[in-house]
Amino acid sequence: MPGGNGRFPLIHTSRNGTNRAGLFMRVAVVIPVFNHARYIGEALESCLAQTRKPDRIIAIDDGSKDDSLAVMEPFKARGVEVRGRENRGAHNTINELVAEAARDCEWISILNSDDRYLPRRFEKCLEAAGTNPGKSVISTRLEVIDEAGQRMKEDEPRARWFYGVQSLGDAADLSPAEWLGRGNFIATTSNVFCRADYLMANPFRPYRFNHDYFFLAGAAWRDQIALSHEVLMQYRVHGSNTISTKPEPLIREMLRMHLDLFHHFAAELAADAAMRRRFYDYMRALWDSMSSFHAGMFQVALAQLVARVPEGELQALAASLQGPEFESSPNRVFSGAYDGTEPLSVNVLSRKLDALREDKARLQDDREALQELLKLRQQLGGSRWVGLGTALGLGRTLRKSDGKSASEKLGRLKAACTASQWLKLGAMLGSQSAKDLTGPPV
Image (cartoon, rainbow, N blue to C red):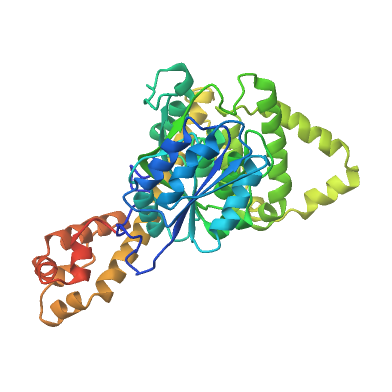
């Protein structure tokens, strides 16, 4: 899974939310509450028990029929902001909470009122945010709990889907876009830790089941998701979960959601070749989705839409498309797959595809290792202690560039930092840069 193989390296952030650049990041938790009097107390306690305390906890009771609001009242004395109003629906409540939190917080964590956080969630999510400054959405692994708050085993019928879709990332090196195409492994808005400005620019939509899926798919296409391999939240499965046991409503909403995605992102996809590559990964994976997406019916829906367009406009559309995709044949790899030794089959083509995926993964690893190597060299170059050592003729191993690939260079430079007696001396004498360089990997 990303994070477990180094694709999403983490840095350490202090418990008050200050990263190494000294930037203080305010974090808000927003909680939409509806008829969860039995669970909301646990949800709030899980926020208050964080190793990195949130700066704000805001809960809105969305017209509950039970005692949810009364259960929350005592938490006001502990700093929780609580209010109730008439029912407006989950997506409207989340958007209202986001607008309130975004006034003075840079990061917003959404928590459904029946779920729980594990104690280090904010600490670790801020670490991932610091390591991935270009990303807007941080998500982690989750575990499934039952009505009583007990962890459900992987083979329990109600938990199998969630653990199964998470396991896809263990079996293959999937990008967030491809993984989300296979199934919504992030699973819930409770697993969204997000920049406030991105949430404000991308409000949740009025779906019953899929407002998190639409949001996450768009973020993945834009390459805005970073992942942690750690289990940092608990998703509760119980009798009143929104997801229905009847397939039709969810299948129809999945069809509508993907039509909406096409409509909403059409201009961005036409303009951005890199985004299209992630989109292709998502759509290819979607044909074998574990979610309630019927790929055949989606193609039928697209056919109905195309049938309403005059043929002249279709011809103009095909002629207007631009991009590097037209510079080479899309099937060039497979067109030469037959070597005369065995008939072409799915297995032969799969081996070709696996080889391509391995090449892609190696290139991705080298690119990420190079980025990390550049960061480490910048840290070394900006360290006064390292500069002093160089002037004194010490710490020369920290200036070497041993190794052929970026991964080899990175590994050897990290090992040199760990073994450097000069850095260890600096750390003992109180040099912060020496402590950072001899500590956990950047």
